[in-house]
Amino acid sequence: MAACASRSEPGAGSGGEATAASTEDVTLVIGAYSVVKDAFAELLPAFQQQWREKTGQLVTFQESYEASGTQARSIVGGFEADVAVLAMETDIDKIEKAGLITHSWRDANAYGGMVTRSLVVMGTRQGNPLGIRDWSDLTKEGVKVLYPNPKTSGGAMWDINAIYGAGLKRSEEELGRKDPAYAKSFLAAVHDNVESLDKSGRASMAAFEYGVGDVIVTYENELLARIAQGVPYEIVTPRDTIQIENPAAVIDANADRHGTREVAEAFVSFLGTPEAQRTLAKYGFRPVDPGVWAETKDRFPQPEGLFDIGYLGGWAQVREELYSKKGIWYQVLAGL
Image 1 (cartoon, rainbow, N blue to C red):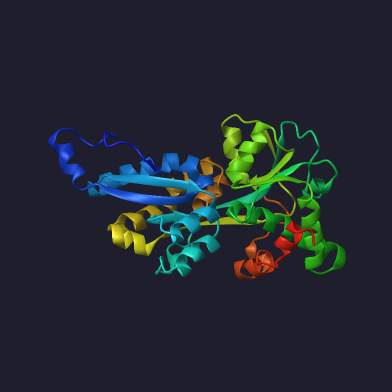
Image 2 (tube, rainbow, N blue to C red):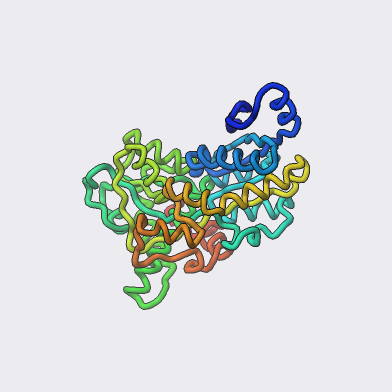
C-alpha cells in the first residue's frame, strides 16, 4: 500500500491554513489490478487537485495493485478498499456476491460500469525475429509463449478468451459453424508452447523483458506503455481478437464504513471524464468516452475479426464452459 502525494502538494497552504485543511482530510483506499498502476500515478494527483479545489478537502490515497483475481479475493477476504478497479466484470461480481457492493454498479456510468477498453495482442522482441503474424504462429514448434495464470490474473482470462474465440472464428470459416472442440484444440496447440504461467500480466512482462520466451500474449495498452518508456517491443495485432473491457465500482460496505462514499463515487465518475480518458489513452488504453475515442482512434488498429465477450456467450457462459472445474481451460491444462 502506498499513499498518493504528500500533504504539502501545491495549494495545501501553510501554517494555520494547512492545519485547518488537515482536519478535513479523507483517505480513499483503492484496490486495483496491476495494469493501471502507471496511469494512476498521473490520475490520482489530478483527481486530488480537482477535489481540493471543489471541496477544500485533501484526499489522500492508499493504493494496492495486484492481479485482478487476487485483488478481488483480497477484498472479499477483508481488504477494505473503497473503490475497486479490476480487469473484468466477473471480479467485481465476486465482490458483489459477497454482499460488499449493494448498488447497481453497471448503471454507475453510461458504459456499463466500464472505464477502459483494450485488445489482447502479442508482443515480440525487436524486429519480430520469428515472423509472428497471427495466433497460428504460436503453435509452431520451438516458439516459446508467455501468458499468466487465470487462477490469479484477469488478464490471463482475457488472453485465453481471445485465443479460444479466435479458434471459434477459424472453425466458422472452415466448418461453417462455431465448433468448441476445434477451438479447444487450437487453444491447446498454443498452450503446448507456453513457457510459464505467471501470477499476473505484469509478472509475465517482467519475465519476458528478463529474456524468457519469444512472444508474450497481453494487453495492447501494456505494450504501448512499455514502448513509450523505451522498451523495444513489436506489437502484433491478430486478425481475430477480443475487445477487453475493464470496470470500476464503489464498494458500498467499505465506503459507508469509512465515510468515504461521496469521494469514492466522485473518483469513479472522474475516471470516465474526458480529462481522465485522455490520460488513460496516453497510457495505451482505448477510451470508453465516444468523444475521446474519436480523438484518439487513429492511434489504434482495428482488426478485421474483432469480437467481444458476447461472441463467447457472455461471462456467465464463459465461466462455466472454460473455467469451471471441468471446463475447457482445465481440460487443456490437464492435457485432456
